[in-house]
Image (cartoon, rainbow, N blue to C red; front, side, top):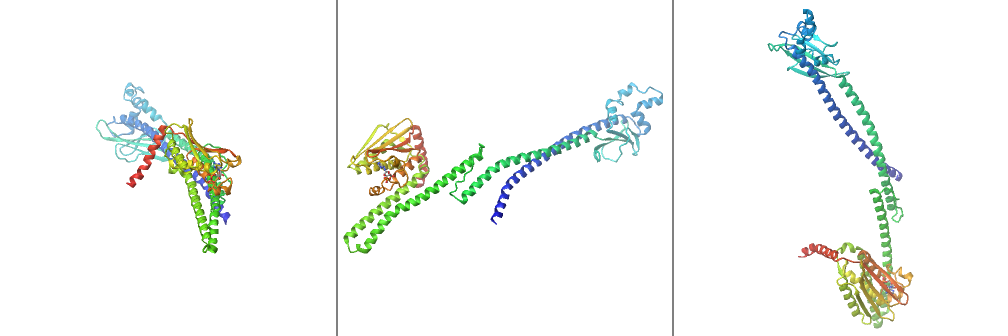
Length: 522
Ligand code: ADP
């Protein structure tokens, strides 16, 4: 059953090729047919016009000659008129006279036309009886309206033109007879049948050629799409699958799409992995305070109600754990938010001098037992970075707080800020327990603590540095550590330096962004 479904789907895939090729074939065929019909019609019309002109010329010449006869056309007056030599010979004169040449009876045109095997001429009298013909088959007479009429007659051998003309005497304007000229149009019929023949052959070759080319092109496009679809199906069936689209080596949009899909899958899987780990870590971290609170509540239930000392101790411990949980939840929220900074605060600018001074002063006030020094000698006045001021404060608090938490005898923290050509650097240095080289690589991981039990004592959840790293990455900055065990550590924040121009531009954009909000509030 499943196989059947798959087969059906497979058939659907190939239908893309069939559909595409059919559309191309149909389009090409229709285009060629339209083109051929138009060309055929134009050539045909032009050639017929030319043939008609030939017929008309013959008729005009004959008409001019015959209209000089005043009486009804008869064999006796037509033949001598069209053939003056006969008349003269009968009279005993010369065969050709200069007069004949003058009246055009032997003009090149007439001779040429009448001698044309395609042209057959017949002259009829008023009673429709034939009185002259030049060919073996005299074109037949039929009644017609008007002075001149042309019709196309289809025969087995092809088309034929027949032109009918009334002859009026130029002397008394009376109808004296009719001229009928047929034009076999051998050249035209030959030309048109050849044209049709070649058009059909060329059209067929072109259609086959385009079908083959479009098939090759379509297969070339569909193949990688099929590969992508297979990978998507595989990952759909197993989200942890490592299936990826192989490099296509084609340097086009499909290659780009494949790369994007691969990157998207990598990212998606890393998110899934992170999410899983995060849920695991969080439940693990929350288990301890919950267990502690539960323990104290059990204690209270059993003996605490009557023992004021147990009651007091348990309530204090439970409150402390609840506070720790609150702190942990806040840090977890900060960590999640730190990943979406670029969307929330795209144009924020912070003044480094102002914020470092304020945070150092605040921390010094909270920890009077510590000497917290600020060195801003290498920091030009009003140095700015692209960052929301709350985040710069948070970063400094995390680092100074850690320095304080992990200090030993020497209770001193040095904060120094300075610039290089491209960067702004802030260094927080302590002279505490330091971090081993192996641990330096792990301290930025979520929930990582070098000494779990001791850190917990100090109120650490192992999230501060992860938040700091996420924040720095979101603002295109970097955080690094240098530390020697037993001597102390130094954490460095490196931010891209903002030019005055860029800072002003960002501030303007930020104002614009805030505008609709304040308008709404108003
Ligand atoms: P915590 O809230 O536990 O301090 P952090 O992510 O800030 O979490 O730090 C992770 C671990 O790195 C800490 O548990 C501690 O072991 C170590 N650490 C951080 N800062 C320092 C420091 N200045 N000196 C020594 N160890 C440090």
